[in-house]
Amino acid sequence: MKKIVVLVSGGGTNLQALIDAERAGEIKGGRITCVISSNPSAYALQRAADNGIPSRVIPRREYPDSVSYSKAVLEALNEEKADLVVLAGFMTILDECVTKAYAYKIINVHPALIPSFCGEGFYGLKVHEAVLEYGVKVSGATIHFVNEKADAGAIILQGTVDVRREDTPETLQRRIMENVEWKLLPKAVSLFCEDKIEISGGKAYVKE
Image (cartoon, rainbow, N blue to C red; front, side):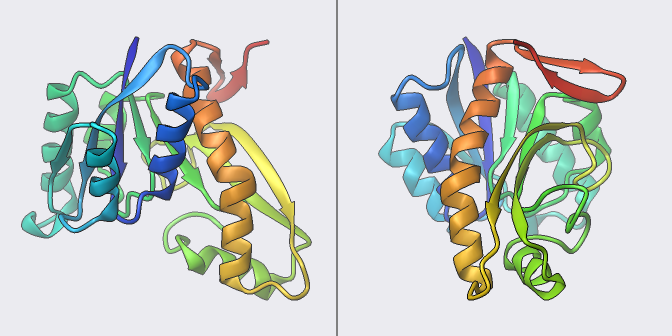
């Protein structure tokens, strides 16, 4: 049974999707053993407590830079003996000391179809604002491994929704979360825990 550590910063809706999927038996071969938050007041910590999941707080503001913060996170991940790290609304970009130590063991969800609308500066509602400003007809979310570059790791799964003329960033965000993120993130986690993701030439393939 693989140990899943979830990193959070805010409300924890993706964490809740993972918890619900685990309870429903949809995550095979793994379980959430710890939640780590960069924000002491994140509601995600309450979600963890409500479901009996141990949590740790490593406040970002207590560290002078990304490297020192990442080293603290790495130490915590090692102590928790994490097999898989899931970034679920984690608002800090981790230094390569973490991404190299956990190569192809960190999964992130990005609320757009990579390689569009991604990279530094594209997060939260900013992604959906850019999508609507550009006028694309479909958007969605991407589940991918995390490497040294923002949103540049191997893609595991992608899903789409139609972009509607009357959409606001908020309505589009909600539709993508409900129809793509909350479904594909648990699926990707289960695939990892079942050893069904193969890496070849830097790309991720799902084994049949």
